[in-house]
Length: 368
Image 1 (cartoon, one colour):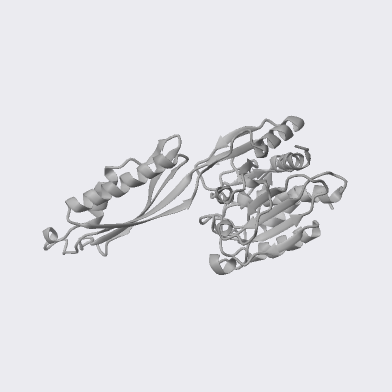
Image 2: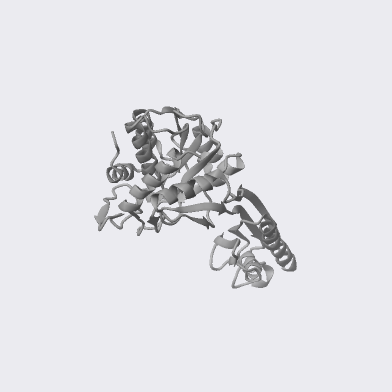
């Protein structure tokens, strides 16, 4: 039975699935994939990720000896959408304004289901094997795909979680380093003997003031996102913790900026007789896919056939595609026509979702 993309999307967003609580949606999707003729698996990653479900994998055998293609989307939303009543105005689906809509990434899931339903409806349509991944905890650090317990067969793939209108191909994304910075000073009474203390908040502030942040160049960003410390307004703060990050599509620039932050905090802390420690972690690696790769040329050919303008785009965010590329599977992300993710103003165009189904369907059924 051919899926109505609007009905499917509305069904998906009616199932609340914040990060770590994707189980209800996973149950629905396993049933849906089976109905669409897929072999369905749930991996054993839940014990590692802390989600109440594993990642969901579907495999559909092709009827032609063509490349196996991967389709991926994530099940979790950045916050709960419990009780949200969607609104449809002039072909656009919004939330009721009290929560996010959840188009990130349930629009991607809906498009994948729509495409699979078209293939099931007419089994004479020629296509190669298809792998489908519905992952957990993408929003909180690509946790699900990092812990995916499955041997990927695909030669390349498409992550249905990109920015921009249909035809947008995100073929480059940055590496991301997280930094936990800790400055320790010395407590003292702020009114009686402040000179006996070392204010960790002041020390950290001086270090931050000596550093650039925001967009550093077209490839690189830096941010100091959370500062927490101190015990009271009348106590010289003896400890402060800062959560920061650096992203760049250029690994040398990434390392240079991370080193600059660590060196500045080290120097400033020493100058004020404070202690500085830190923890750094590479959250994910950058990827760039050459425009001559089949994952991109196939999309351009599909766009040409359908009259869809196809454009390459870079992003500053992280995607499941970062991890899949690091596992040796070239992947790009496709735009779906949704916008304002992670806000109560999030929306998606019904026409763009329908267009995305046709675009992806043509990618899968065009012979290379």
